Image 1 (spheres, rainbow, N blue to C red):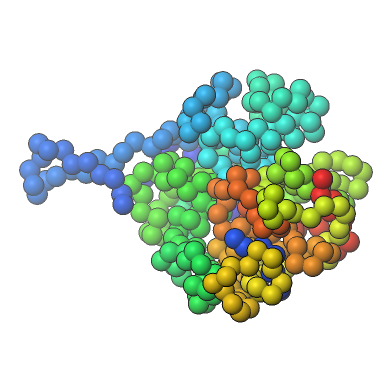
Image 2 (cartoon, rainbow, N blue to C red):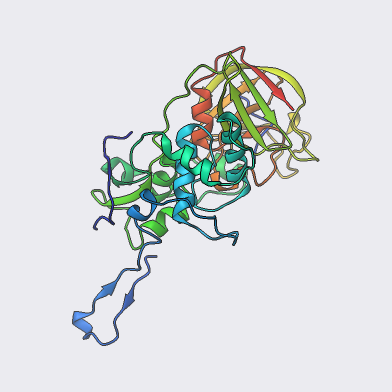
Length: 347
């Protein structure tokens, strides 16, 4: 866990990778004199105490509803190695699949639902506060940031680095969070100021308990599962996998190597889904917003791999051009536990 994270219970103050691509709110009191106007900061979505002390309750039925129980459950799932994707406090399909995998590994009823028994099991593991305070450092706010992420590959190729667009995006990804949830927990906070303390999800995820011996890519479930030599399920990650038009491969492969901070090369001569507007080989520099994210796990079938992604909130909810996309943090966790020769099977 980062040494600058500390528990709080109240709001604190002020390669050729050519197969894949893809204002503060303030309300003034009208009665105040012009020179004495007070600024009112909106209340946070909920406090750290509300999340850290949350007991089991039925998840909200509204798809976009956010609850402290779900934030807590998502963080604890992440901490246990069963990734819900981005921590956003919502009860989506990625969460249901992570719950089902956790239940299977813990010999619980495999419902995919946040049952009282599953919630109690998640809470049994000792660990730090689920929501904690984090103090923004000078390095966090220094950048360099890009003003906006270009959509087109040729425009991306003109940038010297595919970095974050803001300190808020950097912090959200560091703590596996949806940026909207980060801002909702910290309304009115200026993420450009070093020394400001903000509330963050605190996965404190340890390294995998053993080296990965085999990987299963389940195309129906849109999931990646990592297993130890003895057959234990070590980790579950939601994934974006190929579509019907651009399917992921089938059968068995192996990991050939791992490349961190990869270049991304778009070569229309090697692609059957090539963009007609891109006529020549184009290379995009590394960075978290690179089309293949922060790490590339190369597979024995040319141009295919398991890799990170620039948009963590859409993992498992869209289709790729054949490769397997994970959130940057999940891809990095998997990459740290694999070696060349690890078996990968597409189901």
